[in-house]
Image 1: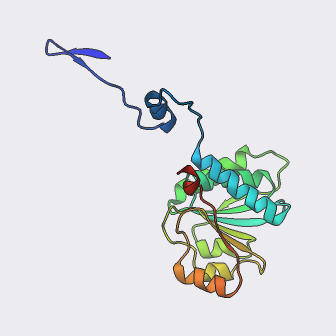
Image 2 (image 1 turned 120 degrees about the vertical axis):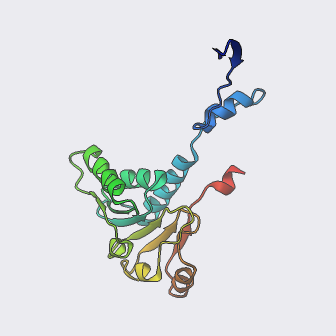
Image 3 (image 1 turned 120 degrees about the horizontal axis):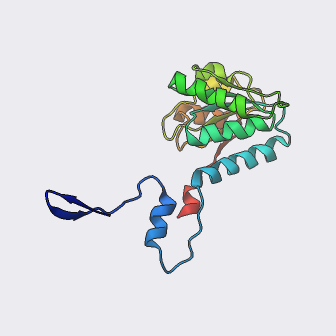
Length: 187
């Protein structure tokens, strides 16, 4: 686009910063371009893992520690499947807003709910799974893992959301920890 300032013609080049697909499609000219969203692929991978592990998700309770894009989408999908979700987020007003959005948008016949909890340890009590979506911030402790149901599992989606001592103790006690991340698949 061109514009006039101080009697001179200037041009502006539009640079897409918020949409990776748009930016790539403007550069890639000789190859086929297929759009995908890595976060949605991660949500699907975690959901399929949980579905295969538990067989039926309805009636389960899970804690999602970190509710950014992935944690929020996963919480919505789980609630729609009948899983009650404890959502933990540092920002209480956004956390409460997210749980309200999930509870308002779910089917009316769905009994499961999303609940905001500011205390990760309390959120993890008696859960079937603790899912860390913190993007590298350690947030899942050994105390939280101990508070799960005896056959509970821990999933690290957030690239390092579990404290190292908690990982060591979980391995020692045969508590399953799974890492779900697609970044190596992208390479």
